[in-house]
Length: 125
Image 1 (cartoon, rainbow, N blue to C red):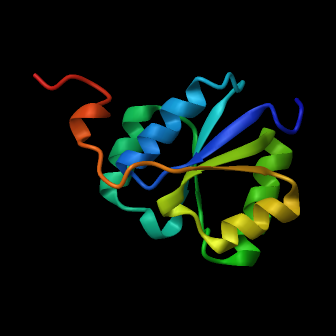
Image 2: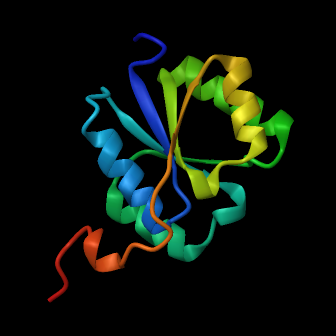
């Protein structure tokens, strides 16, 4: 497996994260993973993660040492060479770690407000 064949999306459970997923899905990566920042880890986010049915990793993206070790492991073990993140969720730690490890960081800017109805993952009955 090549180092950049797979992609991960930083997932906080926000509308912007679904748009990142939709954009990344069109790019043709072999596998897409989710990275849930430790600070966003809660029941609501976990419920959304379960609905997506993608392999998920919880990483402390606010702690430089932890983030670097975890992302290095994901790079080496899972071939994650690209990480997509919405501009509203980008942190300086994530930016620095990706730069140091040679992981491509795709920062996707999105409009400030997008109604949930436009990003619905399934139809409500």
